[in-house]
Image 1 (cartoon, helix red, strand yellow):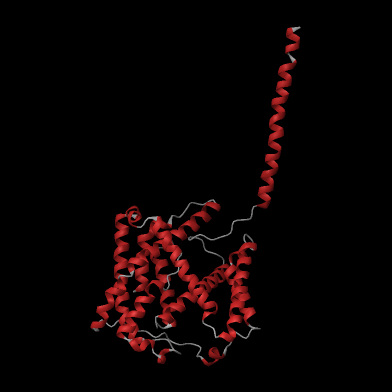
Image 2 (cartoon, rainbow, N blue to C red):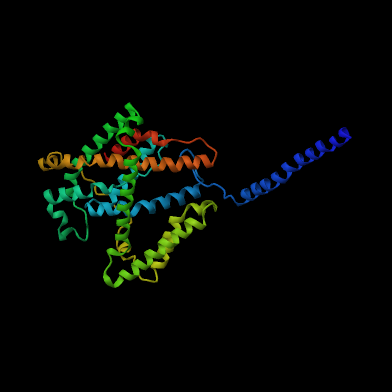
Length: 344
């Protein structure tokens, strides 16, 4: 009896063992299928990718819209020619891409860090630059030539620091500029740009149109946020929330009467940029050159913060695409050399 009664037990145990995995594995497989169905496709281009022509043009135009307001605002506030500022930033970006062999996909433009010291220098040595005579055409070649001496000196400092970092390595830089410092710099840059955005949104406008400009700015902001959220993962169009938001803002501006082509109609089709050369023979220029150049102490962590943040995004995208991380944060020395070359 003992032998007979003992035989069913292994069978029942075996059945239980066989049934347990089936009962548990079924829901897991169903959940995996559901996750695969709900997962949005990963969209994006890495530094060594070449997008199709249509995507390249649309993404490039979006980048242009992103950088244009800040770059032009700095030129106006510092009495530089807007045309030459845009030309220099464009050529500088191309040079930086060539120097880095397309490893650093960064736009090299104007820095807000230099505004205060440049305005002070122009007030001291070219006071007419901020007179009523330059209100309608804010370009002061005399002041620009003086400030350019300091900009050249800044470029030399940045290139030397970049070469030094390339020599000693990024680990040594991290001891001087740890992530807590560069991260804080990124926050400061964001706050400064937010202030500029508020100024562009409506603080410049006359009281009778201030309500209209703030309304258009708010609609543009909401549209951009909605495009960023609801078009994510929708292909190329999901990568263009800023461009689409700008289009919405432009269309909304028309019925408010905020769009005018009078100045465009009266302007020439083409105009050569107003080139100036540093006033090396001016003693006053050398007197303030060091004051301007020392701002590089602030721009080095600023540039480092930009590169670290971009490296974070690029490596995250590379991981999602199943590709090797680029670690462009290791190229901080090369980035500073490229930044200095852009200043020159």
